Figure 1: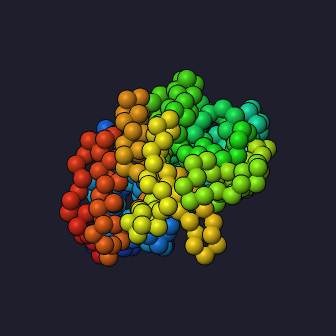
Figure 2: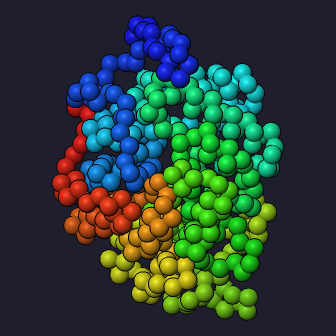
Figure 3: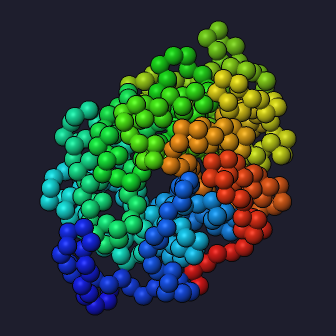
Length: 395
């Protein structure tokens, strides 16, 4: 760490003494400056896994890159070069919620990390159950508020975002003060996926994010009075691979079975959940389809507005059913966000799509199609230079 300097606190009108960050790791010192600009329509992408390549990222579509790892400064440099905010991950905040002193110490530590790694904001992803009006709920809102104030003293343009469930009410036992969290943060990232996490009806495979449920969930936040300018519609770039079980009569599923019965797996009081399946990436499913390993055609579900297909695991003779999203189905969700006047759309996670510069032509075409679908919301034309595999590094 460098010498001490005096920084003017814009919000309080007083000065505070803070440590200067380490030397800039980018090719130009200008890239170690906070991003100040805002886009009319935003796209927030989660940088996961941490070792994912960035060769084919379409930076022209992205406004905020969340969970940028500190150990990869070249990602921050590339983001800033494209005018994209690099957002840090708040991580597990359980200890910070415990009491006032713990909160103060935690916030100070995050501000130091922000300055050290030139982050443009922080993303909260706290998903433990909480009762409405509980102390846990209150303390979480206070933590986000304290963090926002501290970050904006250093950088008035800092972006504070909070991940929230796909629906505001009765969702996985998470009943936080959504309206309060919206007030003390800049963005709520609505995780409009994993909508089969709690199944109380028939235990069968289904879409990860049925379009009618996506619309219903977002509308609940709007009905709370949360401005659409605060909301980001988060979509999944991954899907679920479900092993199909014999039905109630003991009849084993065939390769072309329509109804995939699941092994019940309990989750937070629900007798069945998507935990019966395995999360897999978009690029993996597309590779299976290109290789012809599917036992049914890619089938469109008109109610969910999502595709599915079956395949047979030849090593075990096990029939599987896959539900995921494609550029076609995602475009419908992006259009919904635009029609509702939301501030942005986003995805968990960018690593679910092939972004390596060594990807084959077909994989590159799939990646380009996924980014082209985003344009339904952003209106920004695809960066064809990036799609050709231009490497962006920090120098």
